[in-house]
Amino acid sequence: MIIAAKAKSSLIAFVSTIPLVLLVTNPVALAQAFDPVEILRHPQSYDGKRLTASGTVRHVFAQTTRQGKDYTTFDLCDDVCMKVFAWGHPRLRENQRQSVSGKFETVKHVEAQTLENVLETREGSIR
Image 1 (cartoon, rainbow, N blue to C red):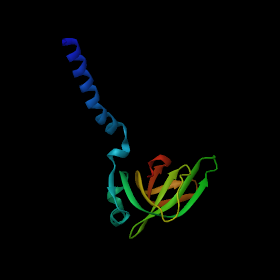
Image 2 (cartoon, helix red, strand yellow):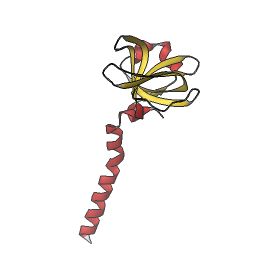
Image 3 (cartoon, rainbow, N blue to C red):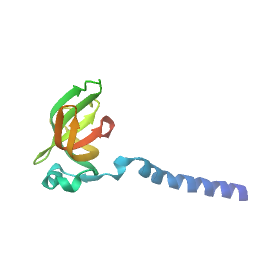
Image 4 (cartoon, rainbow, N blue to C red):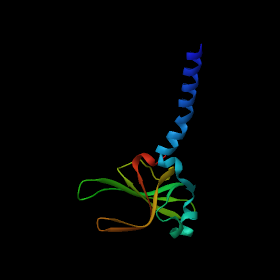
């Protein structure tokens, strides 16, 4: 009976740490949520920060670097539009509502392109 109680308390302690582990290992869970208009009002305040932005997808453009890496750029819009840079070719449609998590940068260089005020993300961070 004492052994069963110890096993039960160990299991409870283990299970109760799972949400904490998921929170710590999932950077998207730590990103704050904002609208594009909030971010673009003072972009310097968000430079280098992880965040989530929601809006309507516009101007989807899939490309491949000279090294063969796929990426996609698109605008995420509410009252204003913010540029998003995503590694890979996520399935996006014009006028689709999305939430995107990633790192905001006031300047990003991709080969010969310079993108300003852009949210960099990965294909799996778009919902």
